[in-house]
Image 1 (cartoon, one colour):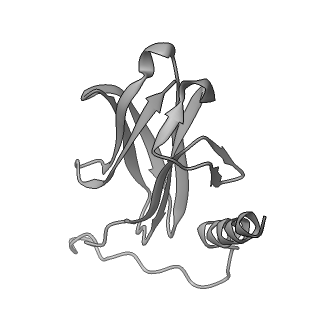
Image 2 (image 1 turned 90 degrees about the vertical axis):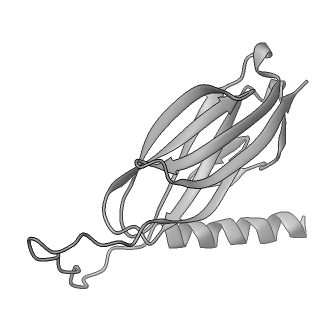
Amino acid sequence: MLRKTILMIVWIFIAAIACPLPTHAQSPSRPAAGSPAPTSKATLIQAIVCEDVKDGIPYNASVAFSISAGKIYCFTFFDSIVEDMPIYHHWIFRDRPSARIRLGLKPPRWTTFSSIQLREADKGPWRVEITDASGRVFKILRFSVTD
């Protein structure tokens, strides 16, 4: 029980960081025309595969999922986002692409997730490759779907 309480407090803290309250601070200035674009890229803080996402909090993270779960999620949390940008969750089953899901990120930090419906034929090894639009791989998550 204590472990669940601590885990919930940690997730609330992460959610508070991921969803900051609006401030009245001056927005950063844009570079002058002809200036090089900022080189800072988004930083992946957390990436997990889980059974559910509720109110921006992932639940039941694992590396093995029962087919009876019916649906599984890939949850990602990014920081240091300079401008709106897309990322991709590439769902791959037995080394064959199954889904490529485009998701948007917004400054300064953002959480997002994608999901797939499980079918009986989906038992076996899976991975999710999390990439940006240029193909830069942030992380590869490996997991299995079993009986």
